[in-house]
Image 1 (cartoon, rainbow, N blue to C red):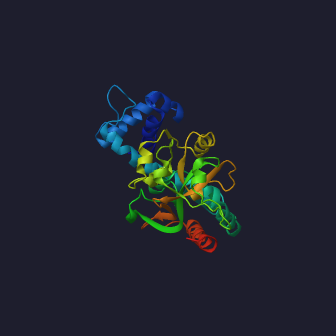
Image 2: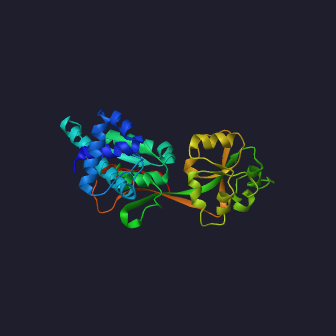
Image 3: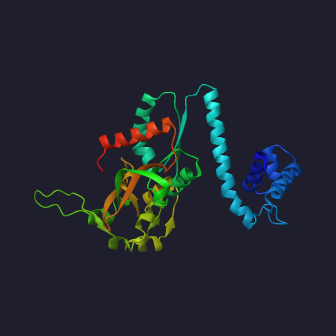
Amino acid sequence: MKLQQLRHFLYVVEEGGFRAAANRANRSQAAISASTKELEKTLGQALFETGNNALLTPFGESCLPKVEQFLNAYNLLQEDLKACASGNKGKIRIASVPSLVTKLLPSVLGEYSKRYPDIEIVLIDDNSVGVAKRLLSGEVDLALGNCTSIAQEDIDFTLLLSDPVGVVCLSSSPLNALSKPLATGTTTNKALGLQWQQLVDLPFIYNGTCRLLENTPAEVLNRQARYTVENITSLFSLLRHDLGITTLPKLAFPANEPELVWIDLLEPCLVRQIGIFKLANKSVSPAAQAFYKLCIEHVQENYLL
């Protein structure tokens, strides 16, 4: 089994056919077909269905994630060796949920770059599920987010922050007024919060963090959602146009947002456990370990759990 055969197999899957794979590999279609046939011969099973050269067989589907993981590891090794050969002292790869990229990570990265100016940093933002997958596949060295989708025995997780979940709506929404007591005498108009029952009759916008509502009474909001939005920019656009309300962890809400407001969700009271994690029983590079330690120290010194 040759490395090039595995690459050609992956090209066919990613490009949706042998002709497009041949263009990507700068080879003839016949050469890609022959390479794949040789791989199938070596493995003793067909990878693609007869008559549809882009449709994987069940055996091909079981092979695909293993080939992807192997080639990811190989490509990362190749990059690291080239970096050493060119005098680059190292590289770390970090996946993070977007809310940490905008609020927590910049200060950590700034301090890390001061201490280790020759280390290259690759930062990838993704949702919590994507962050976990990137770590498990070996694409990144470290991950930041909530890791509920990973078996605990597979990771080494250190809690950084407990991030409360709240309701996001227009500042002019009646919900904002409902969340505050009436100002009487010296009483301040301090926001109290909302209960999930106050939200059920309003259009709800589902986003990735709404998974935190699952297995709680508020899960009904997810089931009756009018919109489902993956991108945070799109989410805030819908909110600003008064197309609905949503729930978000506090760190995911912009610090200076003139049109929207974040209100505590009191019932159910939910928090997102944010941490930094790496694969268990697998050491990381000294550069990645230094970042891991610095991130934990920075949060302990500057944030309250």
